[in-house]
Length: 239
Image (cartoon, rainbow, N blue to C red; front, top):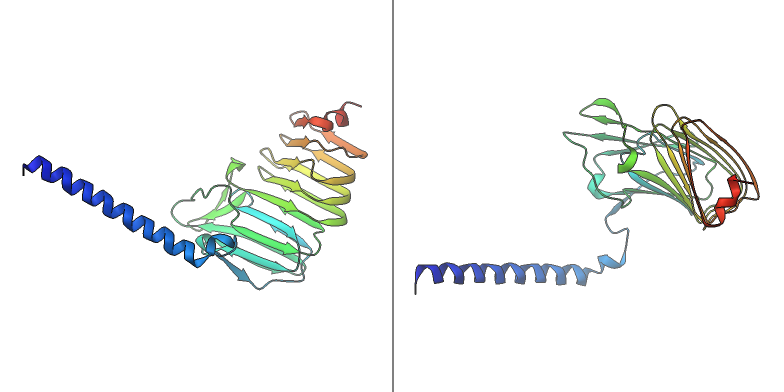
């Protein structure tokens, strides 16, 4: 057999072996049933009795806050980078990275559940090699607030932090979007039911409302602020 044919045969055998090993690993993972549990790679932390959340590292992590029994779960892939502490009734989420901050996509790195959320404060700061950093680009993380049914919620968004509300029923929402340098962003979609809101969009802040009508709406926009309206929300700011 020619040497060239031997090399081709070896390459084919190597490819077949790699495919077989990959297929076996997929079967083994399938048998564990982990794919059915979205929290299988999360570790539970022992925190409870908090009614407000502060996420200074909101641009470095994707965080979800949902209505439910008290619970804090961190993705094991970032357990060494995420710091969670409790100060009285407030949960505080910070981040500290070594070497280089990695982009981990839009999947949640931290899931927080609580029966009631009175206030949420977000910022765009984190630690890198022990030194404080300020994020000027808020696209690598956000905080999602979902499924709360309550009288009121207060949002305070600093710098470039981003917050999205979905599936919430609120009698009153007060939001300060964009205090400090940069452009914070607030997204309100049509799955929310909000009876009244007071929205203060500061500096370069951004407000996006899609298919949501708020019967009693007060708002203030700074000269450099932006608003994006879609569907039934268009009538909100032009009446």
